[in-house]
Amino acid sequence: MNILKLPSLLEDQIAKRANLMQSIFLLAFRLYWGWQFFVTGKGKLINHVDATGFFASLHIPAPALNAWLVGGAECFGGLLLMAGLLSRSTGLVLSVVMITAYLAVSNDRVKLLNLFSDPTPFLNADPFFFLLTAALVFVFGSGAISIDRVLSGFLEQLSQRHLPVKESADSSKVVMSM
Image 1 (cartoon, rainbow, N blue to C red):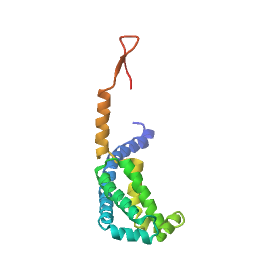
Image 2: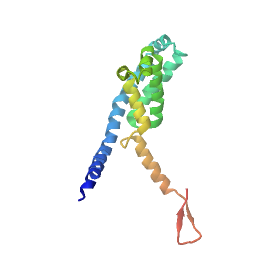
Image 3: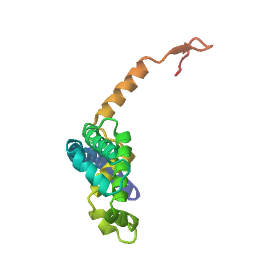
Image 4: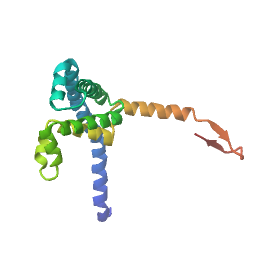
């Protein structure tokens, strides 16, 4: 064994084990924070009058409509996150909702705008872990433990089974076309 290859071999072994944990890590975030999104959104939908009043106090335009939209995005987005279904789209929508939450509340807006000069208040703000989870799922996808992955595998097998086959000029060769 070449001693110079040892760091590379070690790094490869660590990467293999870390890759196995990646889906578990994403699943844990999706389940916990997906549930939190669901509960928060459900609260806005059930207590629509209160949510509308809160949105109006923040001077959000069309507060009643936005309370329905945000509540629905959080409630159903949370369910989709937990299931790992339409994950990247859901992550994008929820990221936009959470960035808007930071911008809508003046104290949180200051925290967002001062992120690089003083990150601690931003990291301690209520929307932070919601935003982090939504961004993680948007950027990395839902991981191997998800309905997205099952559907992806199923659709791939289905498309492989139904690829049209053309004969080439040389009849001994078969070419698959898409």
